[in-house]
Length: 193
Image 1 (cartoon, rainbow, N blue to C red):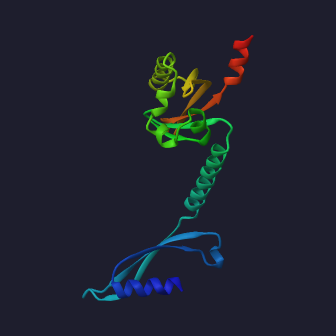
Image 2 (tube, helix red, strand yellow; image 1 turned 120 degrees about the vertical axis):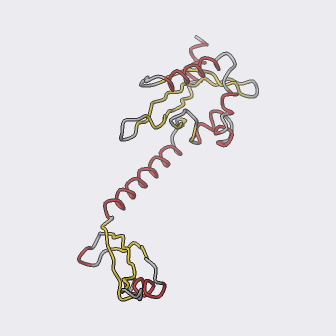
Image 3 (spheres, helix red, strand yellow; image 1 turned 180 degrees about the vertical axis):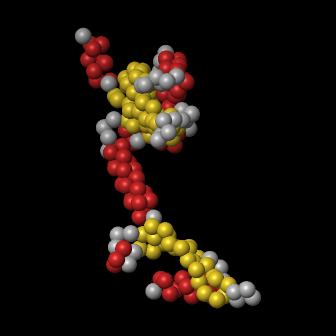
């Protein structure tokens, strides 16, 4: 039915039509990208239809695998007991999970606007900022930095941030991913000893 409809459209409108179609029983499990165009005679009248079909099944499967992988990451990150964040190749933060919001006690939107830096204890800001900039500008394999968050009350949370670079297929750095762990209980226990 789709074949006849597309053929009729090509003839009626006189323009090329491109669409996806799943394979016939002989080509079950395959998806094709079809392009059909009017075939005109010397007078410019439509004399028939010409077309080309390309099997795009591998690309469709790859897209499905990628989508499933992204969904697994989103589910894992959303339910992680650890803060998870991601930055682009320039170090601009592009993702924070719910635990990051909980640790910083601010919305994802505020974290995306980099307002989380204001929550870092004044005595630790330079340490964290310099460590992050050094990590971004060098070819260091990882970053791990412990610092305090100064929250209303005044309350203090002790956290450890760990980051790793992300690489694309070409080997170029494409961004950074990291986690944020609340170590407040351990630090308070150590301070009491």
